[in-house]
Length: 104
Image (cartoon, rainbow, N blue to C red; front, side):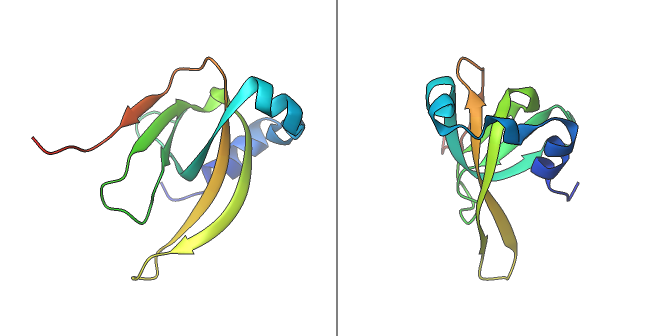
């Protein structure tokens, strides 16, 4: 599925209502990367921390745990593929999963 999951989430609920940075610093943790919705589970979001790397870590969160999202920049790789980079604020105490490659 190629669409902007942050725009979809914003339509479903008001992510912008948490724009108070003081509240965010106390109640949420920020992660920066390229977000994408899970194809098999639409209520989950993957955040690729370094989309230009072929082996970077990926974080998985429930979409309901995202309290705020802000677009930072758009980057492109050498093939011209572009990635939207967001700062995603996740509610403190939420459970996330870190997927990371390693050599056996």
